[in-house]
Length: 258
Image (cartoon, rainbow, N blue to C red; front, top):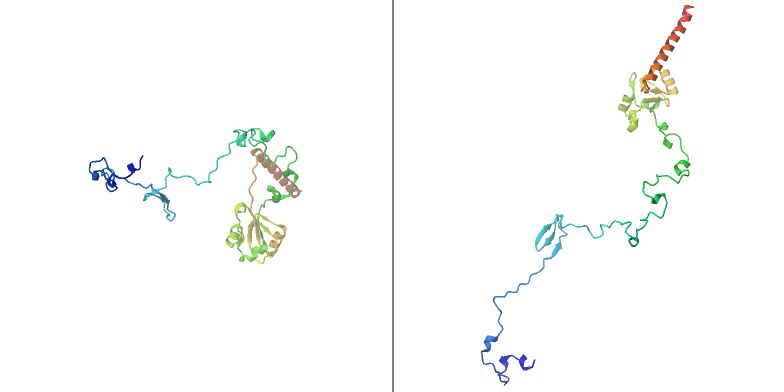
């Protein structure tokens, strides 16, 4: 391309150059075409609304978008891929899958129970044990709700009042809970009692019984729950009781007749 071809045709007469063009130069000026319209569109920007407390927290092109199941996703780092065992050596858990080479713990099945030490004496059998409830034995559990004479004296009972498990609860002397709510009452002999009361309990200690009798209290031993026995054993016990009753009666009638 020559230098003359880069010069506009309107400049040629002023420069003293001849031009073969014989038409009007106005028709050759660049004019915008009215049929073409250039539109510049802007991509919609997504902005997180941190100040909003409602579920509508994303703005897309000036319109709010709610969180839905199709636009929710876990936070980066919150989900971890599961360990894929038995998928080859390069995966890190191939071949033995982390269970070792051989042995009972590498076989299929339930394995070994807790505390098993291969047949030797296990630890829970080697350590010494304590007696009673401290050693986990049922024999050490309490069988009564114990109340001392000192506690009955501090409860301010009046002469002739009845002392039982219910009245001691009303006075606030005892407050059994849990397993103790089903236990009977037993009176112990610690302290002194100065009033004549009617005491009903399942059992009395030797010292408590002696002190209460000296004061003049009325003692009532409540019957306990009968132990269940087989019908055949109950039948034999009844026969034995009947036999010994007749024998005692006969022994008592012999001196009277003599």
